[in-house]
Amino acid sequence: MVKFDILSHELVPKFFILSKEEVEALRHSYGIRKESLPWIRRSDPVCKTIGARPGDVLKIERSSEVAGRTVVYRYVVPG
Amino acid sequence: MAKRKIDKKKAARPAPKEKPKAKKTATKPKAERPEKIQKAVTKVAKKVAKKKSPVRAEKVKGKKKEAKAEQELKVTALDKLLEAYKEVLPDSLIAQLKEKLSKLELDEGQMKAIIEETHKAYVKALVEPGEAAGTVAAQSVGEPGTQMTLRTFHYAGVRELNVTLGLPRLIEIVDARRIPSTPTMTLRLDDEHKGSLEKAKEVVARIERIAVENVAKSIEYDMVNASFIIEIDEEIAQDKGIEVDFVAKSLEKLKIGKVDVEGNSIIITPETTAPEKIKRLRERILDLRLKGLKGIKRVLIQKEGGEYVLHTDGSNLAAVLLIKGIDPHRIYTNNVSEIADVLGIEAARAAIIKEAFQVLDQQGLDVDVRHVILVADLMTSTGRIRQIGRHGVSGEKSSVLARAAFEVTVKHLLDAASHGEEDALEGVTENVIVGQSIPLGTGIVELFMRFSKEREGA
Image 1 (cartoon, chains in turn red, blue):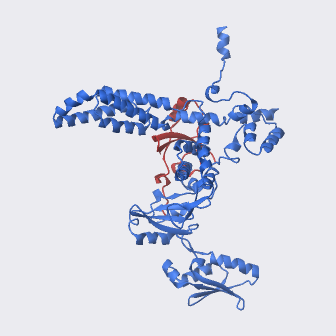
Image 2: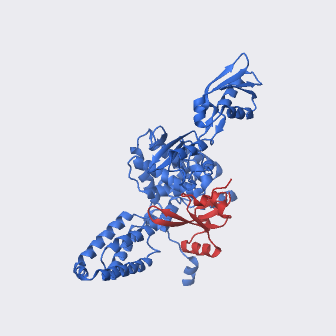
Image 3: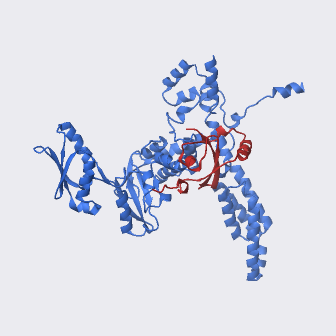
């Protein structure tokens, strides 16, 4: 049976794994630690699909009804 | 002593809830009060347009071709101007500016003035650091909640299908129940199937759960022969595409006992004759799934805007995603935790917003989405869905006093006392209790002294 690609579902926004440099730049621009970002679990279906590992930071591009498009970040935690 | 230290550290780490809320909205400026800004845009646009009238007269004289070229030039100039604001203004505002400004006859300087004015209005409308965004959201959702009908079971678009709405549903969403009281799915069909009723029925046959009880006319227990006699309703069975032999075969798999077919009746002779076991067996036979998906109890076909849409009673997202004929990208269920399991936390966040806002909207309550968004963000911030109440967001506050102020006061105070917990007094509630100024608004500012520099200076 073909598995459905959950990333193509209309409720799922776009995900990108940030590189180390990008994470550093992000930390500096917000002045926070990675753990202060909202979290996403490693066991999350999206994390499994894109292969994100604990410690990674994901960039999420949502389409928003008030702002058109918003960018948020989530920190991958074990569990 | 050592234990206490650890406790304090623990308590200090997850910063008080109110602070990050304010920060979050501040760092996410794209979502702020567009109505205000829009007003500002139109106001300025009108002002500038008035001044412009003599130039317009000149333009009318010009040839059509020239006007067209000019128009194109203007659009590119506008694009260039807006490009500079891509980073500071949200996409939706940029799009609005583009649409409105390209209709007006303005020169570059005037366009620039309008865009600058818009930017000013936008920055003014942003939430400031220290603003009690969470409290405002709580009030904005809570007050309309008091006006909702307490018990509204009515029909959401589909006749015959009951969906919980109103306050009970809102509580369900905020409490993050694993299974809603009325789970339902909305299934859109793919291009091949959405056009015709026949094709839609084919899809229904694939998903609708049909048990023995749905096709049986009667079931009796024959005491003399110690066997069940199940009479199959031929008409219904044919309609559902099920044959008597198929039912018999499925029943054999249950391994209850010997299965015989006699015309339209199936006779099962179980090995046991104990009355209480017979009762349980009867339930098992009736509940045996012959066809369809687990959990999908009933499917209704509805025509919506030229295409057939299926509404189901019961929900099974993981299974429905793989069914042929359904557009998997647009499947929707009102079971939020199911969405979290199958599609991830971000999809669940979107679903919470959609569900909660829909409930408020249906009751005619005009609540800004951004309040609902804040609630959803908070519920999903740990990567799992947390309820707002005692077992979730409110119960995980680091401050003892804040927790005790919410629910089950004595338990929290007692536990805190027996564990020797400390309260860092960082949040709003604790400081209100203690009688200090709260860390909100101007109170959020703290002074730090740099001792090293001080010493250098001295």
